[in-house]
Image: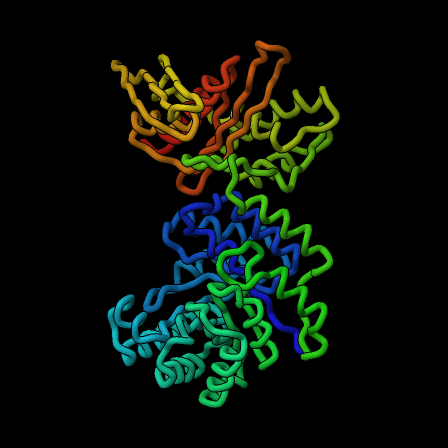
Length: 469
């Protein structure tokens, strides 16, 4: 029985999506859920922003226990930064995407086949200096030049690649056609039997699952799928087929299919765009791992949970947070991570305010686009900003962006009532991510919009204080 490796592409595919790209925290939570599902390989996106992306890779490496982490290295690029970000992993994979069709070679890379093959050789050789697990993905292989693909395969294996993946980016093949393509490849490149080879199929005709199963029947050792539908094979569907019929064609997986449905449901809570995700980027994130703390927990345990939430505290701030935590913990049975968020926002990193709120006006309704007019005071002047948005809070945040000239990723946004009745006070927590760190602000008011503006401004002041010398 052949144990096929299952590689999940959810995090990588949703790293650059415009409609529902994941936040830093969501990527980390999805990776942790995939790890619990025991997928063999979790794919992350390549390093584009050196600080933020490197921090994400390091965080995922620390968080996962079972899965191998794979990160692409651009063709012809130096793999050293990627390898450095992965250095804490016991084992990791470097991926190289090589164009298989002349269209991709000439219009994307602006090079002929001969030059591409030399780049593949050079990049594989460099990657092998850092890991013995190097994968070459042949992009658009089903529409590629068969001779050129054979040369890429031979060059990759010669320089030490351990996995070759054929990518059907067009997604226009029926399972029989894809099987015939793979048969031709195996005849043309007999060295494929000496290593592991796999497939990645686009789902343009809703045939990706069937094509992947056809590949398994022809000896594929690795498949790419996704827990969330991102135009590729479905992790849930493919693993269900293997669990039910895999014995008939000699294939099994390491994936925990018994918990598949529940885990995929949890992953979708992070990935599916919904009303809680506004144009500004509200994540409405779910605390999937709500660590409950008590007064008996040590300072180290409390700060460890704070770090899991994404914060990096100085020794002074850590002391302040722990003191505030103990005051709360002695009054109740346990303290949730959301309450710990509020403690960090209140007790940690209190800085001189660069911007202070003077006043604001927000207009909204079913027949108009929400608008906010915000006036902030800074030093000896007042600055005003006016913006439209997807709701009054979104508009107010965008108006503050307009005034400060800065945009930060909104990592989390929470609202809760702290008193009861018609005049209940609302507490808001805003978490912003900048340069790979999380900064939180707290606002309290009987007006939800006012509390939100104050919390956002509080977090912005903390970021600016650290950014400026």
